[in-house]
Structure formats: C-alpha cells, structure tokens
Image 1 (cartoon, rainbow, N blue to C red):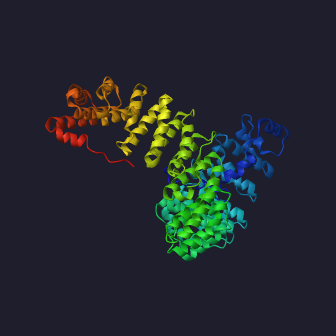
Image 2 (cartoon, one colour):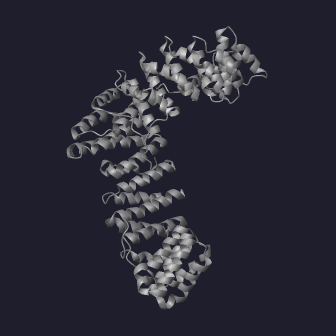
Image 3 (tube, rainbow, N blue to C red):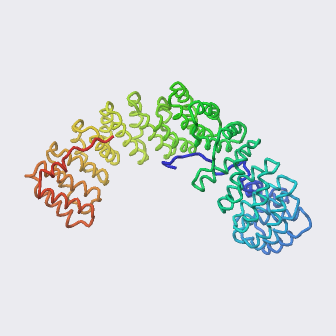
Length: 593
C-alpha cells in the first residue's frame, strides 16, 4: 500500500510448514556450475546436479522401467530425474501413474519427491490425482509426525476441488494432533483450504479450532494459528481474529519464543487490537518494546506499528509518550543501514510515521540526506521525508543539500530537488526568501530542465505569498525562450496573466505564445485563454484584438470541450457584464498551503 499502508509482511515463512516441499527438495538439487556438474555426472558422485544433465532419447521408457525397479536407490534416483526434468520445463505428465505408484513407501525422501510431483501436475491431471487420496488419508494417520504433516500439507497445496472433501477429516485430526509440528502445519492448511472452499471451513468449525490453537502451549503453533486467522481475515474481508484478555496474554507470551516471522504475525494482530484503557496499552507496549532491537527489519517495523497505534490510547501520559518517542528513533534510523530494497520499504513506512508524529525523527534529518550511490527510488523517498522534517532550525543545512542535488546528472532527481526547494518555501514563511534566492541562483545556471522546474515551483510560491516576491518576475521573463514543457509554459503564462499590470510588455509576451496556440497542450491553451482575458480586463484598450482572436480560437477552432466551454463562459461574461467578469476572473484566490 504506496501510498501505500506499506507493511513488511513476508511473502512466505521459511521456518513454517507452508514452505512448499519444492523449496526443500530443490535446494538439494540446485544445479551447480557446469564443470562441477559434469564431473559429478562423470564420476557418478552423490551430487544431485547430475540429474539435470541432458539425457539421451528414449529416456521416458528408461525412467518408467527405473520407477518400477525393486531397488530403492534406483527408484529414488528415477523420481529425482523426473523432478529435474519437470524443473527445467519438460513435460513428464505421461509418467503420472508410474510416479504415483512410488508413493507406497516408508522412505520419507521418496515420499516428498512424489508429493512434489503430484502438487505440480494435480491441476492438469485432477482425475488421476484422486487415485492418491487413499495414500494421503493413510499417511495422515502414520506414526511418524513428519509424514502426517507432509500428507496434510500436500493435500492443502493440491488446489483441486474434489480433493478438498477428502482433506477435511485428516485436517480435523491434524489440528488436534499430539505433535506440535503437525498442529502448526495443519493451522496454515486451514487458510489454504479457506481460499478454495470458505463454506466448508465454516461448516466444519475449523475457524473455531484455530482460535483454540492460539491458546496452545507451543509458541510456533500459536504463531501459525495467528498467521492463518490473519490470512482468512484478509481473504474474507472481515475480522475473524477476536482477541480477548486471555488470548492477549497468550500472544504476548508466545511473542518471546516463536520464530521471527511468527512474531511479525502476532505483532500485526496486536496492532489491530484496541486496548480498553491507557494502563493496558502501556503494559502491551512494555512487552513489545524489546522487539525494536530485533535483527529482522520486518519485526522492527511491526513493533513500531503496534507502539504508534497504542500511543493514541496513551495520549494523556506525556512523560510516557516522550520516552517512547525517544526509543523509536534509533531502530528506524538503523533500518537505513540495510540493503536498498529494505531501505525503500523502511522509508515508505517512515514517510507515514513522520506525517503523524514528526517529533520522532525531528533531530535525525541528516540520516535522510542522499548518498551518491543510493538508487534513485531511495533518493526520491528520502527527499519526501526531508521536506516533511524541514524546520526553521535546519533549513540552511537542507538548502545547501538540495542545491547540491540540483547539480546531479539524473534529470528526474534534479527536478524533484528543485521542486523540494519550492515546497520548503511554501512550508516555511520565514525561510521563503532564502529558498527563492537559491531558486534564482539555479535559474542563472541556464540548465533547461532546472529553469523549467524553477518556474513551476515559483508559481506556487506566488500563490502562497501574494504581492511579496514579484520583483523576480523580470528574471523569469528573461528565460521565456527556454520553456518547452507544457507545465512550465502553463506556469509562466499564469504568472504573466496574474501580474500583467506589473509587466510592461505582458501583451507582447502572451502574443508570442498565441502564435502556436493550436499546437499547444490543452493545459497551456486553457492558461493562455484565462491569462489573455485577465490582460484584457486590466488593459482593455491595447488587448481588444488579442482577446477576440483567443476567444475565436477557443470556441471555433478547438475541439477540446473544456477549452470551448471556458471560452463561451468568458465571452458571455465579457459581452454582458464586464464588472462581473472582473469579480470572477480577477477575484482573490485562496492561499495554498
């Protein structure tokens, strides 16, 4: 959420059971460099990369024979070859029944490989997948908890409607299994089942069972229960995560012991909880604050989110709020020492934080100054935060920095930096003059895009401080020839029209633009029409012909409905009541913020 309410929820959970089996098997079979794989293949060594080497024609027949071999090692190798072929994009669906027969084994490695194959081809072979149902149901009651969990996980990953009805019984048993590994695997499987058949999950009471898992003695089971309920809430669009006082204590207890991704899910759930009173909020914040020192940036951001949402409830206690504000700054600053991608996510979050509570980072503006090797997306986010944090105390520092950025080579970054100087002027009245001074210096560089962006932001400064900085209009008029972008032209035309009485040759300047009226962008045409009417109202004798020409162009030559409508309105105003036209067109405009 760009703007996004950006969160750093992990895309999948490496330590959880819903890591696909594919990840587990493929890590052992990842192809190494060509030299090592060829030597391994030549020597018949133990490296699984040999299964990825191109095999001779007729391999399907050979694989089928090997899959029916009585030797376990040959059978395992054959399935690995099938998986390797599948991984590189070959169609091995013709071996479906042969691979399926291999599932009747006590060897967990072979079972994982067969299940991986089934997950991949279940959608294209749903009828044949039904043949494996008895094996899944049988494995779900196996004495080995790893096999029980594997069976339930695989059934959850096979997104075939006809399988789901067979999944319910084994899943119900797995949710109440004595082994925590099976329970935590089953918890995530409920979320997957909800995605396919939400009514079935409601009917079987699996959501209530997930609520029971939140009170489990094992922190990993609690975390996965919370993760599954969060997923279901997101899918269904309603809050199924009901936190009571007893559940709250269980979540806080599990927070210290579960994996880092489990902590993220628990913290995100706590952020949605509304404490009954300030004392309860303080108690929760006290338990969450140690997470600010966590090595995982997702945990840090989630902890910050909880603390910020609870600070509103704690509103009355200023001392506590000040203490928390001091504690929040260091972890947020530390996030900016991470990789650029993490920096970007952190900056998006910080952008939201400083809008609500700028005091948290008011003394840390220097850490947001751009480094020469920052990627452009990081630089742009830093600029936004600098503008939010700029004050009269640090404006001189910021202006020096922005002026430096305006000489960089990246055009987009330079333009955004020039725009930032104008936004600082609009934000800080006392510093406006210094900001305009910097903009004038930049205009003197005669760099085309710098001049154009300066004109655009100076128009905003005029709107913010009317009748204060008009002395710089002459400098702007000197650079009229360099303007070739629609937004810059429109801004300059607005300035000429608004201050026509202070510019001796305003009508001549507008006339130069009118020569190319029909080729101009609609935004420029609209501004030209309004500026010419303003000129006419201020100096009717000399601009009579010009306004007539513009109104003709707008109403008769143009096929833009906005331009024609505005032209007709001005024409009728001027022909019926020029005084009313003055009130409408030359009336005071609201000061921009």
